[in-house]
Length: 103
Image 1 (cartoon, rainbow, N blue to C red):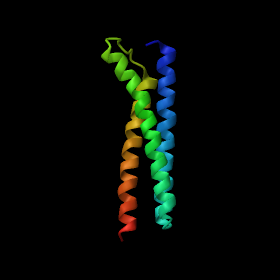
Image 2: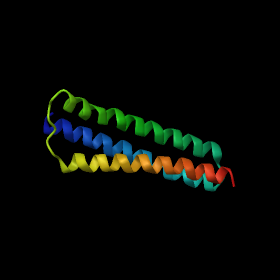
Image 3: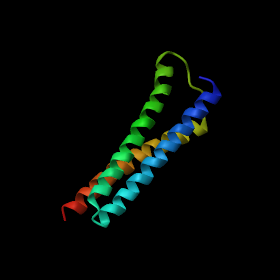
Image 4: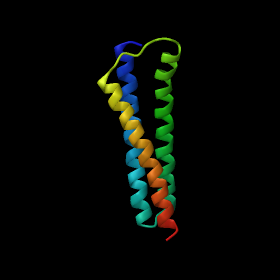
């Protein structure tokens, strides 16, 4: 995989992960205000952004599985960190919203 393609993938991961985290945090805020349908919609959007990030991430995994080595890139490493953090943020938001609904 060439450097430009890896940069494109990295930016896609960062962008979608950022959108997922933002939607998750907005969903928590909506739940605090008892706006349940808005919170649910925002969680759905966060999960969709994570799904897109996952599809992008699979491009790299598939390349490596084909035997095409991926050169180390701090940008790609950062993008994976962002994706993992976004996954955790969305999972936590779902649990926090559940707790707000069931007080």
